[in-house]
Image 1: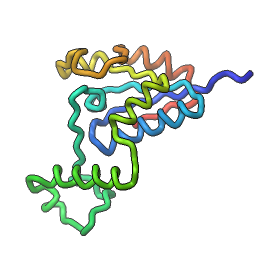
Image 2: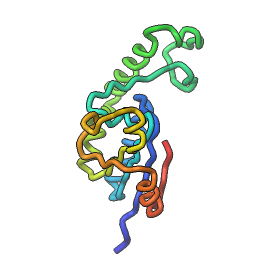
Image 3: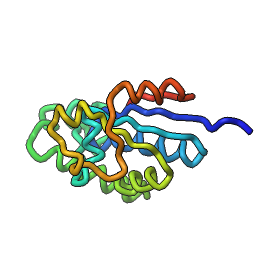
Image 4: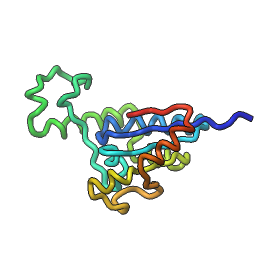
Length: 156
């Protein structure tokens, strides 16, 4: 019998659009019977917060499809981030894409290991109680142990 394949992901971004890739890849790999670990560091820890309010910014994101072409100056106006976030959440819902809450639940139910970077937790003064349950706290050395055994390692 073949040994189980392993996927290691480093997730560094905490915006709505960057929360999806590590969770979609992790849940897909878990469904394909991979052993999956996500190492959440720096702004990626926002995704693990119990009370998360992930946003999406059109500013500095030229690939973001907008209903009309908007100059950068308009993208920087107050309220544009909220509008872009609302539009994206609605589009995701309309297309039947699982929410971040649903993806996190699916990942945990599929035994995806979630590791919060303890150095980042300390850096941003998070408490363990700020983050969802079933999270391991460890440093970069722990990630290297996992990545060394991984068949695939991704940086997102």
